[in-house]
Image 1 (cartoon, rainbow, N blue to C red):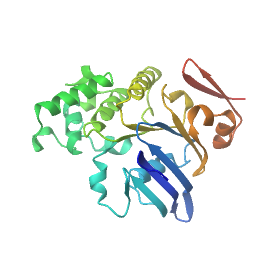
Image 2: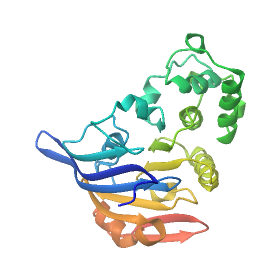
Image 3: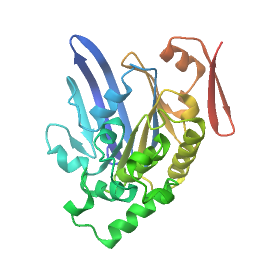
Length: 264
């Protein structure tokens, strides 16, 4: 199999905790510049799969390849600098008194202290501003984290995750806790990001089809720790696959470049 474009490769992956399978029989490949959605109900294994893919969680069995290297045969710290990760874990480590621009620029060193602790060039600060602008957060530059809304925080954290120019960007439930307006602004920004052919591969975890940005190309649907369906989104995301994943009869509609689902 040609793996030249592979950025993530999971083969026969399982994660078992206290006799319970959190993941089982996972085979999944993400190639360069693909835009993936990981979809499923709470407890389906979405975050666990992302943690395995990013090498922060060692599976009970199976093979994990990240950026051409096999987990267990390489110092994963050298790989993690090329993986952008935005989720609840990093958010908890942010010093809330720091302004947004420092939170973003310190992402270059994966640091959770202020910018005095590392050297940053004028180019680094300019890059931080560009990433904030890219996610409609340029006006937040001098606002401290503690004063930001949940939606504003998410945009700042995604901007931060781009400071290492990653080969893949992992977004773990980036829209959780957002109101409708904040969600739509973030979805629009992610849609623009996906449309840029120079953007890295992106993996977005969600449990709502309404949160899938335009331009995302692939989807893996999970249910009870197993893959229900996986592949190009226009072929794979169906009412049948959704119903199997969520355990309830669901309808699905695609309109104006967005998906919508409802029971009945």
